[in-house]
Length: 74
Image (cartoon, rainbow, N blue to C red; front, side, top):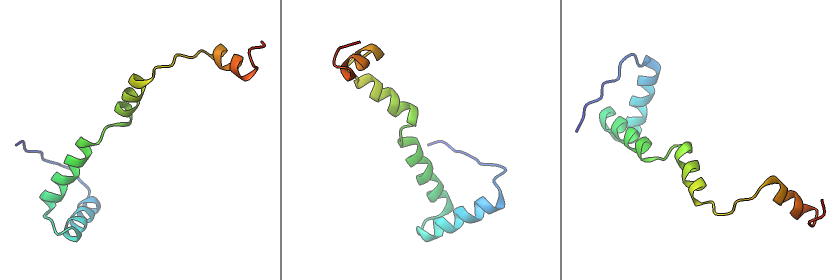
C-alpha cells in the first residue's frame, strides 16, 4: 500500500474533514482513505462519454435529420 501526504491544507478544510470523520465514527486517516478510494472508483465524465460514444451504432448526418423532419422533401 502506498503513502500519500497532503501539505498546505487549510485549517478550515482540515477542521471540516475531522468533523466529518468523527460523524462517521472514523479516524481522519480512514475517512480520507475511503474518500479517495471512492473518488478513484468513480468514472470521470470524460470516461462516461467515451463509453457512451463507443456504444453508438447509428450514424446520422444533419441532412438525415432534416430529411426526416421534412418528410424527405428538401
